Image (cartoon, rainbow, N blue to C red; front, side, top):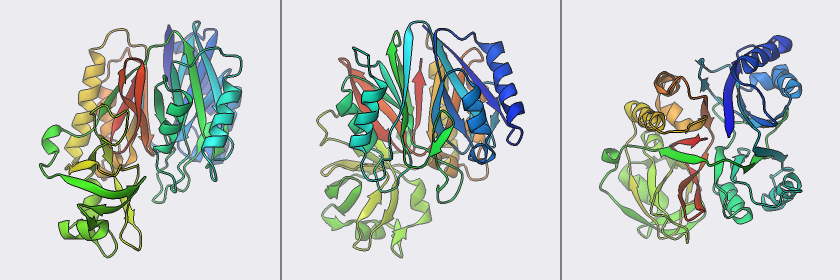
Length: 390
């Protein structure tokens, strides 16, 4: 069995005070068992001040995670905040790892880091928590796709790093207090753990009846839709102008049928259009398979809040819940406009007080769409709220 607790601090400048607040909350909320690990999310100011490193080095367990824009725990919601979701157990083993830089190659460093972290273990982990860097030249799918090759029977859950800047240039991953823009941290969980997952996308009534077909694509690069140049296609729909997506289109995501995938389970995923190349190729935040069928979906502030609250209500009804870790797409926060904390505040007020939880914003969400016959359909998502129920 796993016990969980969420702890936090808003103290940026006084490192000792920040750690003391974390330690006092941890002592009051949970007794550490034989094996423990911490998942951290923080504003980048905690890196600059040294508080992140100080806290991680003082805690008696490995700490991995990412920077984020804003977050929520049982006690509070905030932006200039650091929080740690602690998992502790006598019958679950946690193995933390860190890759070398992924800037030039993802597969080699990831396989090497997995081999090092899993050394001495004789079975596959029951869960892999993954925290990749935000390297914009890669589609986010590269990470769950690779982990699915390395660990075909292991569900992946996690988030790409993000921050609250316009360019996302301060997004960092974390491993025991060290931070990086190019390395991936992760935790392998072995033993008595049976993770469950849920995904909140957009309401079905918001999905438009229109359908199109991707007729030429390579990973996240879509050059033709319905046999028309992608830029011209979107321009005709009014979603592109002057070589870029229109502002209105930034908040109208795609719902994609990944029918080309051998492991497609019939559950679509969301995709966001990021930009166009000079030749009119559309660049998405995740892979878009050739021959995939897509629809458009409207997105509003009310949609963001309602999908999050609906998922929390479902979690509240489950039995044997020891903790919940949630990540919501950064674009959902952007849709909220000036009400940047509204989704988090509603989740905070709705989730049962006896369920330890931590939630933060994601640079892209990693979560299985299904678990069938022991095989997880690990996917990369946009525009979604994903939940790990422990």
